[in-house]
Length: 126
Figure 1 (cartoon, rainbow, N blue to C red):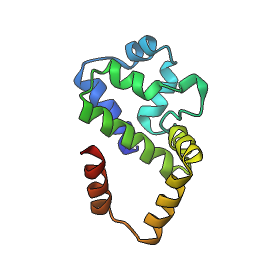
Figure 2: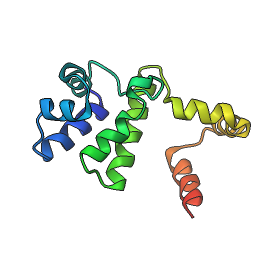
Figure 3: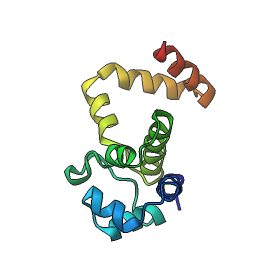
């Protein structure tokens, strides 16, 4: 089971929502949602039109706070990366913003740590 799978399932159970109800309300199959929560399927990828906004829909449906929503998205991205994929919104942004590629390459060459990235993110938030 991935961290994303666990986190999604925990949030659903906290709200006392059944798998069947959530799947029905989100208009996805119970088996698909079950496979996501059990880790048999990776986090929904925005590349697939059918599931383009599913993570956002899940966060809204579960009434997640902004921090919880951010964590869900982060864990979904991590799940995709762990399985050799990248979220389409990120690849699309990099494709549309050439300097983003340069910045990421420089970050890689500099071996930026999570702490370094936190500082960068904090600066962006200001």
